[in-house]
Amino acid sequence: MKDWINVALPKGRLGEKAYGMLKNSGYECPAIEDPGRKLIFENPEKMVRYFWVKPSDVAIYVERGAADLGIVGKDILLEYEPEVYELLDLKMGKCRMAVAGKKDFRDPVGQTLKVATKFPNITRNFYAGKCRDIDIIHLNGSIELAPILGLSHVIVDIVETGTTLRENDLAVHEEIVPISARLIANVASYQFKDAQINAIRESLQKQVEET
Image (cartoon, rainbow, N blue to C red):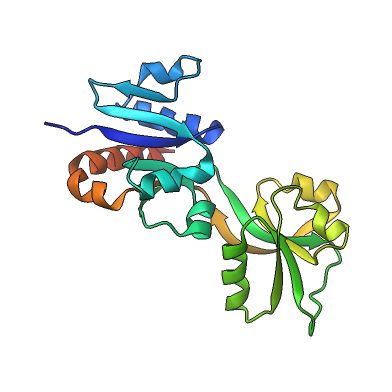
C-alpha cells in the first residue's frame, strides 16, 4: 500500500509553476485550483497532499518532516543550510545572487567593507573565501537604498532582471552564484518512501530535460 506524499509548495508564481509540473507528472489535485481559504489539498486517489507555505518556510517543513517533498529556491538552501536532500534542479525561477553597488564603486582596500543584505550567511561565506573583512548590515527590505544613502558600500541580493538596480544608478559588480528552484526531500522520507519520491523526481526530470 502506498503512503501519502506531502508536498510543500511556495506561495506565488514559482509554486504555481511547480504544481503545473507535478500535475503534468500525474499528481494532480483539482481542489488546489479552486480559489478559497483552504490550506491543505488532497487527492486520495493519487495519495498526494499539497499545502502552500511562505517560500522561506518550505525548507523548514521538509527538514522537520511535515512535508516529504518541497520546492525551494537555491538561495534558501545556501542561506539556511537545512538538512534535506536536494534531488533536482527544476531550471525555473532563474536569477542570481550578486554583489551590487554604485556604478563607480571601488573596493576600499584597507577598510572594513560594509555590506547590506538579507542573506548574511551567503554573504559571510562568500567574503570569507576572499579573506575580506566585512561588516554585515542585516536589512529586510529596500536593500538598494543602503549604498545610495551611504549605509553600506555594497549589497548582496538576488538579481533577476537588474531593472531596479539600473533605475537607481546601481550595477552588479560580482556574481556569487546562480539561483533556481530545487526539488528537496526529507531525509527520513527519502529512505521510507524512496520508490514514490523517485518516481516523482524522474517524471519532473523528464519535463526539465524536454524544455
